[in-house]
Image (cartoon, rainbow, N blue to C red; front, top):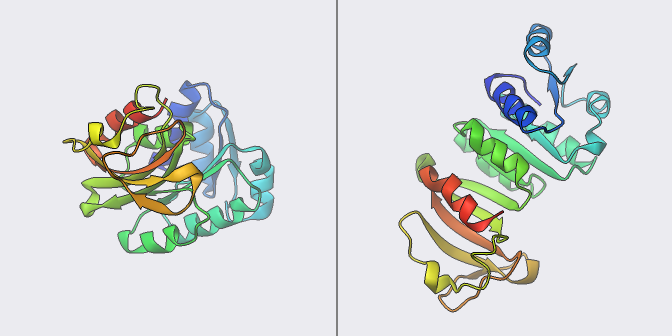
Length: 213
């Protein structure tokens, strides 16, 4: 949802990756422009309207991305989309002071900052193992929850990986338990275990490739 600069470029990247994309855009002139630039379905309407979401076949979606420049629209559309149970909901937050409202809903899977790079957002869409994302240190770092799926990391002790100049593993969730434990050096990474990891923003892609397939 949202056919602005971010939405357009993410859609282009996903289409190039052979993904099936539908764009919802409210502005009629923008819809016409998108239709000329994209070989995909463009629906002119509001993502906060049930009929529009249903016309976009939201119930069949693996991922719903709310990427407009309006936080209220992104939040409301995400909450409405949740009722149709897409695989994952990713919401763009444009104003830092609104981040807490987004994250406290416990219904949005990933909250991303306005300054997010297109390529990174594409990875969030395509990587179902990313569980949650919070921006810290004024955008210079991210606290990321992810599921460890890369074979090179499974079986390693956290003490073998910490400390690192690009990241620091700080939390561990045992057997998908919501309760987090402070990471200790002797904890062993298991397949699909969930960890909380503080990552330098500039090293995000590198770290994702290290821990996830």
